Length: 92
Image 1 (cartoon, rainbow, N blue to C red):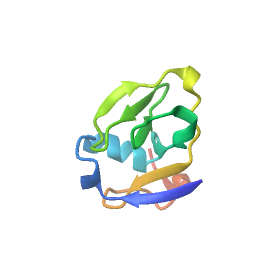
Image 2: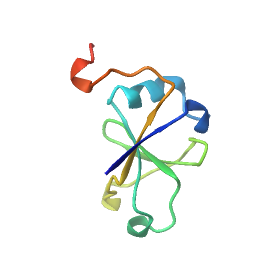
Image 3: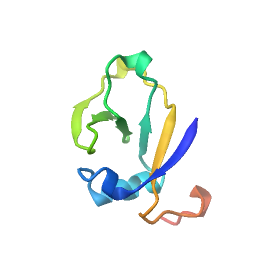
Image 4: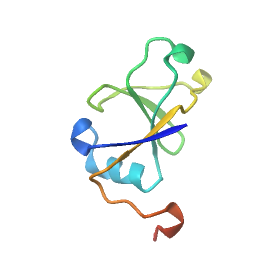
């Protein structure tokens, strides 16, 4: 699995609070292998119990059904949003 950092401005339709949740490790922003799901959008966002397909600007396109079994191939964090030095150092 590859880890990438992107700028918050690269996904302008994602709210800053969502971006902070991604950087804090509470939610997961990722890409998956296109061959496993057919035509796909650039990003997926996994929240507590849901996974959402996102447009190239970060707008929610649809909720992904559990049967789709997406594999996380690449994870993304925002380089210009605060984040803990490690998840074990995160204070709640």
